[in-house]
Each structure stands twice: as C-alpha cells, then as structure tokens.
Image (spheres, one colour):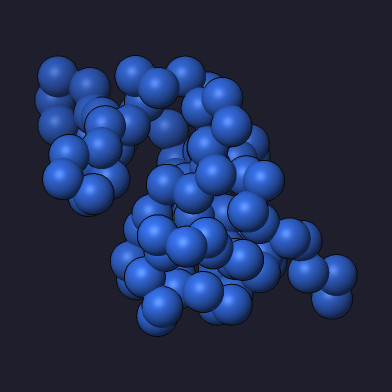
Amino acid sequence: MCESDFTIYKGIVFLNTDKSGNHPEKITDTGINYFYLGDKLTDEKLKGQRCRAIKKNNKCIRAGSKMLVSFGNVKHVILVRRLRKINN
C-alpha cells in the first residue's frame, strides 16, 4: 500500500479512484479490532476508543507508519505505534 492510494486533506481521508470514478479494489472493514491510545494532541473523544482496520484486497491500508482505521462510520489515518491489538 502506498500513499497514492489515499489522500488526506484538512483531516479528511479521501480514497483515490480510477478514471471511471469507481474503486477498482474492494475496500472493507475487518474483524481486526484495535484500541487507540492517542497522544497529547488527540481529540479526547478518540482516546481509549476501539477502532477497526480498513482493508483493501485483504490487506490493511498502510503507508509507512500510518494505518487507515474507522471509528464507527468516521475514518482516520492513525500512527500504528499508538494502536494496540485487541485479542478476542
């Protein structure tokens, strides 16, 4: 996964599409749950919340040390080192 697969503009994540406007790959929420630790700049609403990794072609969407996750219906790009995997 490379950074050209998604764009961040003013804190909003946009998934890049092909010329027809469709997503060429299937993008889904996974069953992998994470606990978001946050940091001193994180919104208090997100600290300590559960989130789910977003997958594209059965691989998590990552770019370097960042991962695309969803908190309910809202998607955020989060530093992986601030996530802890929850074992179910």
